[in-house]
Length: 184
Image (cartoon, rainbow, N blue to C red; front, side):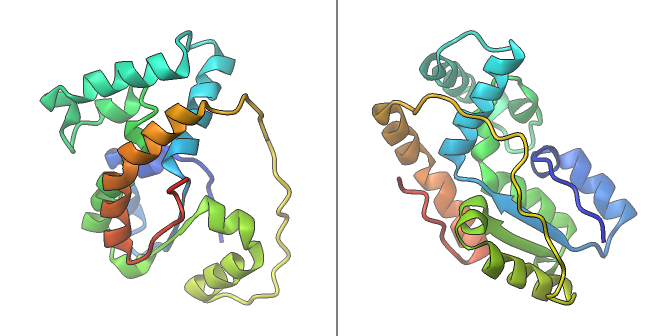
């Protein structure tokens, strides 16, 4: 069994096509993070890398303006995800998952949230073991690596983003048949 831990694959349609060609029967595990928290974390990754100099609020406004362009907003446009300031678009999980579901059967995908994994690690692992049809007696190291901290997001920004993502989250929840607690 081999695992990979990166968000790059989920939003890259080229990765989905390549993986389906090489490993058509693979079982995939996806942990979706609350898109508000993911956007903020991604922003601070850019700050630490020196590639971002705008405030978070200004950066998301720049992106939201660009997403109003129909060419960029197109579901098939990779640019909205590869743009260094794609903090918001990378949280459009339903659009991303749709690409994978065109290439893989729903039964090949195990989908949960980062928050469920962090709050109920053993239950989530047991569910993953069942999905993979492997013994539940594996020893797993749950130690966190590369943990970063950053200032708390402004409450009005968080409220705006929670509201903004509601429609996108609803599409995801409808696709996967379950809801995550992302309304806060």
